[in-house]
Each structure stands twice: as C-alpha cells, then as structure tokens.
Length: 288
Image 1 (cartoon, rainbow, N blue to C red):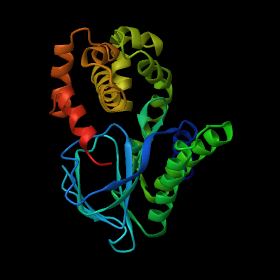
Image 2 (image 1 turned 45 degrees about the vertical axis):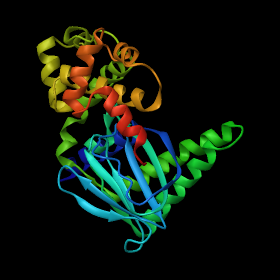
Image 3 (image 1 turned 90 degrees about the vertical axis):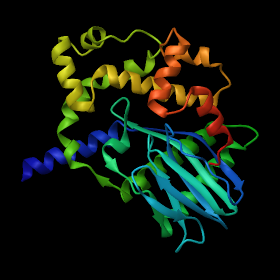
C-alpha cells in the first residue's frame, strides 16, 4: 500500500513539476443569439463564460449542455484540446473567454492525465470568469511591464490549478511516468524541429535506444508511435498558425515539415475534415 501511494505521489509531482502553462488568446467579446462556431476542433484548452446570455455545447462524443450566467448558478464551458465540438449562442451575451496551453513532460497535454469537466458551475465558474477578465485587462494595457507579464503567468497557472482541482487524475496513466520522463528531451526536440526530418532513427539516438526499443518505449508512454505523434504535433502547429497568423498555406506547410503544400493539405484534411483554408475561414468567423 505504501509503495503504491509513493508511486502515485511521484506521478502527481512529475505532472506538477513539468507543467508548462501559457495563454494563447482571450478576451471579452459580445456574441449575438444564433451565432455558431460550426463543428470544429481547437489545439488549445478553451473556457468561456457567457455573461447575460446562454450558450449551447455539443460534442462529437455526445455531450450536450447549456452554459452561461442564466444557467443554474452560472456555468462555464470548458473544452480540452482536440475535442470536436460546436458552440451555439441561444441568448445574446458577452463571452469572457480564453484559449490556453497546458502541457507536461515536454509536450504531452495535461488532459491526457487529468479528465476535466466540460461544464463548471458556482464559485469555480465565477473564478474562471474573473481570471479571463484579468487576462483580458492585461492584454489591453498600453505598456506591458515585467510585473504584468509575471501576473499573467501566475493567472494561467491559477487557472490550471483550479481546473485540475475539479478534474480526476487518470491513475491508469501512472505507469508511464518513468518512460515519459526518459522521453522528455525527445518530446521537446520534436516540438523545436517540426519543420525538419524527424525519422525514428534520429529520435532513438536522442533517447540512447535502438529504433525498435525506442518505438516500444515511445508507444507505451505516449499511446501512439513516434511517426503518428510527430504528424499530430505538425497538424496542431498548423492549426495554431492558421488561427494566429496570416501566413500562406505554402508557408505554413514548410513550417510544419511538408515541402509539398498539396500533401500537407491532404494530411490536414484527413485530421480535421476541412482543408487548411476552410479551417482558417471557419475559425475566424466563429465566436469564442
């Protein structure tokens, strides 16, 4: 029993000590009744509180719920990265929203280890709204100072801590910590070199393992093989560049390791069921 408890404590400490949290975007945005995001997936964790309004959430897995100030005692919609979903505004309001990145062990999403609720209510919902509001205020400051940037970082970690306190740790993922810790330099290397050739042999050398042994360790820790993981990370980078920049599809293709933009577009559509251009248009016209 003691050994099991010690292993779980080490698991929790590893998640906390390797956490990297950042805010990607956010704001306080009026949304009109009838506005819909359409079906989409986002590469970041998303929270939205609809002040004076009501929103409706649908996910591909069958979750259906309303959120907003006038639902029960006030409810926030929370969505992990990669969850196909659609948000529809039923009653006009003002969205207090944010998109954040929560990763651990060099590049694994925190939500792979902690199941977080889709809907948060009560005092926790109000706190999420407050954090989103403070972040929006910092972004509007005429001059960013180090104190404000540190405050922004603290708020993001406060959000991560709040959400983690509402979630459930996946004990079935506890056994992968040792392998994942060994792979942390590899995961960091992958993220820093997504525009380069990332063959299994090169990555195996970074982990001081043979290619076959590396594949087994990587698959056991991450849940997919290295090639699939690299492709997934490239598509996530593509999502971010399509949303946050005005770069051309050809430029984004190169940034994601594809010399051929047509191949890049085909792979992107396989992942997201939309071409890169369609994805950019869908997200840009959608509400938060």
